[in-house]
Image 1 (cartoon, rainbow, N blue to C red):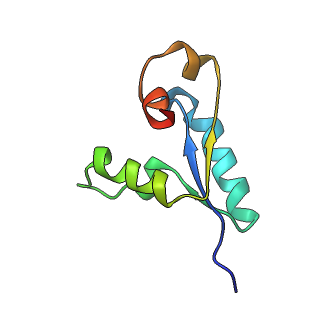
Image 2: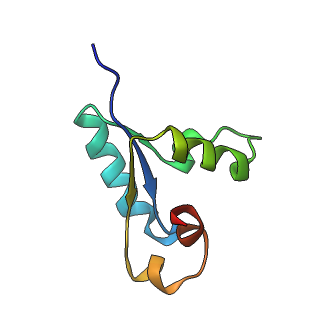
Length: 80
């Protein structure tokens, strides 16, 4: 069986409820989505783990919204 497609979900924290829905949907389709609150373990350094997850992903899905484009932060850093 081939390994599942790995998708990094890049999003603004304010959009977390909608991104959770997308995460659940992708899992039902056999995709392995990476989401910080699901895949970062307690005590892990997110500044190390997020870049590792980005490079390990087959696809980076950028969830653009008013929140993500109007706020300077990690969405911009992750896609840079």
